[in-house]
Image (cartoon, rainbow, N blue to C red; front, side, top):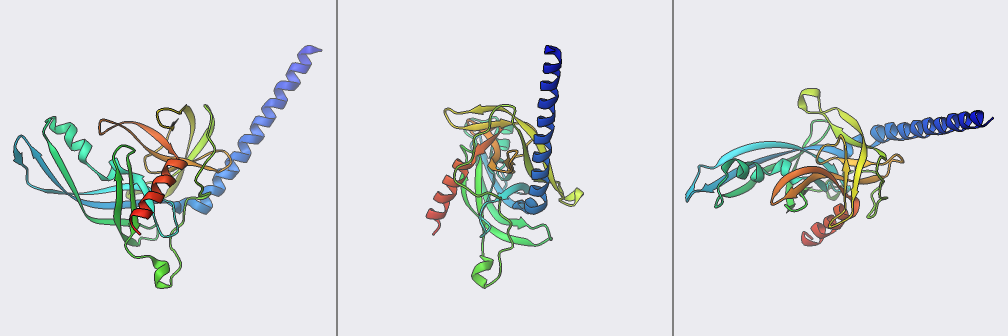
Length: 254
C-alpha cells in the first residue's frame, strides 16, 4: 500500500513540475514576441590614445558593437562598459605599470531592428560596475513623433530575488551575419551573492542583456564582475542598482 502512495505522490509531483515548466515556457515565448526589441545593438566608434614607457603611441580608431537594454521610452539604454571600452583589454596586453589609455567616443549609434541608426551620446561610464548609459541625441517625442523604442517589460525599481536553481531566460540578439535575429537564452541561477554587493550568478547569459524569471519579471542586466579594472566573471546586476544609477544619470543631465 505504501509503495502505491509513494508512486502516486511521485507522479503528482512530476505532473505539477511539467505544468509549471509549460507555464514558464508560454510566458517566455510571449516575452520574446512582445518585447524582443527592448534589446538593441549599439555601435561605438572610438579613438584610442595610449601612453606607455614615457612615450605616446599614434592614436587608433576602433569600431565596436555591443548589446544594450532599453530602460526608458526616450531610449535610455544600459550596456556592459567593457564591450564598448577597450581600456582593460589594452592594459592587459601592455603589462606596463605606468601605461595610460584614453578613449574618446566619436560616434555612438543605436541600431534599430528595421535598420535605422539613431545617433546617441554616452552619458555615464561606471568602471566598477561595468555599466555604460547612453541616450539618443534627439528625442522623437519632442518632435511630435511616437517613440520608436521598446522598453524592457516590467520596469520597476525593485525586482524579486531569485533562488539557487531557479530557471530564467535572457533576451538577446544574434550578430549581423545572422540578421540580428532576436533570441531567448535559457539558463539557471547558480548562486545569489548578497555582500559586499548583490549579484546573481546565472548560466548562459551575455553582457548587456536583461534576465527574467519564470513569471517574466525582470531581474537585472548581465555585466562583468570587475577586479582591479578588469573583467573577471559574468554576473547579473539586480534591477535596483540599474535603476538607481539611471536616476543619477538623469539628474546629472537635466
